[in-house]
Amino acid sequence: MHIISSLLGHVLYPSLAKSGFFRRYRNTKKGDYLTIVTYHGVVPRNYAVEDRLFDGNLIKPDIFQKQVRLLKLQYNVIPPEELNGCLARNGTLPPNSILITCDDGLLNNVTDMLPVLKEEGLCCLFFVTTNSIRKSVPALLWHEELYLLLKLGSVRSIRTPVEGPVVRNSNGRRKVWWQLVKEFSKVGHEKRQELIDHMRQELGFQKDWITFIRENPGLKQRFMLLSLSDLEVLRDAGMTLGSHTCTHPILSLLPPDAAQHEIEESRNRLEQELNIQVWALSYPFGDPTSVTSREVTLAERAGYRCAFVNSGGLVPSQIEKPFHLQRVHVSADMTMAEFEAHVSGFHNALQDTIIRRERA
Image 1 (cartoon, one colour):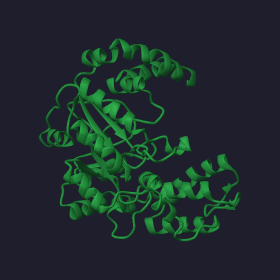
Image 2: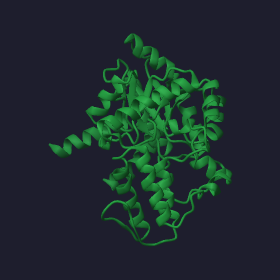
Image 3: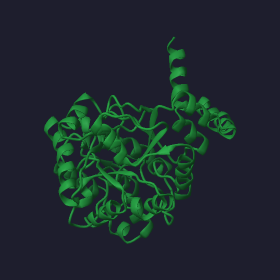
Image 4: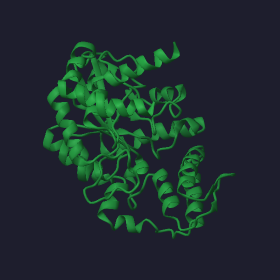
């Protein structure tokens, strides 16, 4: 499969993109579909990528600008509120519609993404956690804080709060990190923070260890979450804000009451603090294992109009599953040709064909 992906990305897709195939394919095959693209921020201009695994969801600002310019040129990029209105009246979106979204609510959304969006005259649906509206110092996403602790810690071998795993080397750290993310997602925010504090102490860090991140512009823009004033900047610039839950756990692993709180309280607090209507939810992580029928039901009951996953292909313009809207996930290793293939719907259609033939 890796060989096939390499051939597609570096041989077939560039040739098809150069010939204009993807645009023609979209017009003839998928014109009545909506493509939702999702970002997780951009690489700050003064930040050096050292860990491709960790920073793989962030793309360079110039690549982001090239991608949105291509979308403007070839498709109908709709503002988020057009989707909201369509859902409210059970209508149909215009042909070849594109919606731009962004998850996680990192500071670079304002410092590096917003200037591009304003220059291009486009609107984005930004999904943020309510950690962004804390009155205290800016926060990190807890799972990124955990990764940084494991990566930067000077102790090579420690026993974690979860029975079994022991950190020994870089590969071990990554494996343990994801196991801990799953385990820590099973408990509420306060207990989760206690576990992270335990990890911090085991790894030899002081309580104020993230000060060096706050004081370094590149690190701050890469890792810190948006503040309430930053959210007001996005709102006043015409961007739409949606919920990414309160604290970004894997919802499917939480007890029902805790999952319900994450989904409902985040919407309530964002609406109260920003005086806006929050009608959209993005499920954290958003893969098939983190979004079950329970989360879909909870989102609908919480009063949202729609909810987004972080995988899949295109969505019919006559939307039938508003609480499981699929998105094209844009990553750092995606070439422009691959981007075109995904946005047009061709990549997903080809992938489905290959899977069907393998199963036959």
